Length: 211
Image 1 (cartoon, helix red, strand yellow):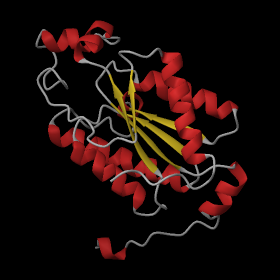
Image 2 (cartoon, one colour; image 1 turned 180 degrees about the horizontal axis):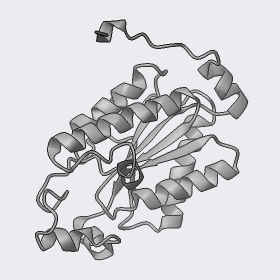
Image 3 (tube, helix red, strand yellow; image 1 turned 90 degrees about the vertical axis):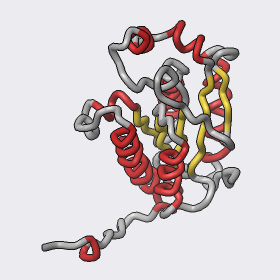
Image 4 (cartoon, one colour; image 1 turned 60 degrees about the horizontal axis):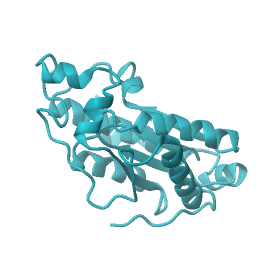
């Protein structure tokens, strides 16, 4: 029987420094958190398109996409949501170690889970490679947008344990960046996010995240 102690990570033959020298930017994770309907996916994919065209190695991990594949065995109970974010955190860390800027767009409602994702990234990468971005929008705005009709179903009792309806959302206490999509347009929010990413990652080192 194989035990955990028998499993040893294998080092890549291409170093992170070599990958970053070729791409011209640091690898790392931009973790977008916020309520359903706040605009996380919209901003994540717009950022990917913008920076890819500028030569960045960038990839998006999106909540719905991950639950269609890697995490399709998980439900929405607290334990399942925790496992969802645990897996995503490790995938994001692997991409960052390969020199990508990984944009993770997940409600990720629990602070403890987001902290574990941070630790998964920071375990093997230099400081300043994980940035938590709070995509903030008030509940009324998110319910008005309701792009997937989920709030309507939650209010009708068709979806249980829906974030901000009958389950909690723990907002970041010290995010690297706050983007308030209640007040800002998509274009302006994207411009803010793009400036943030290029200032943190384009130089190759990034800035140390608060806390």
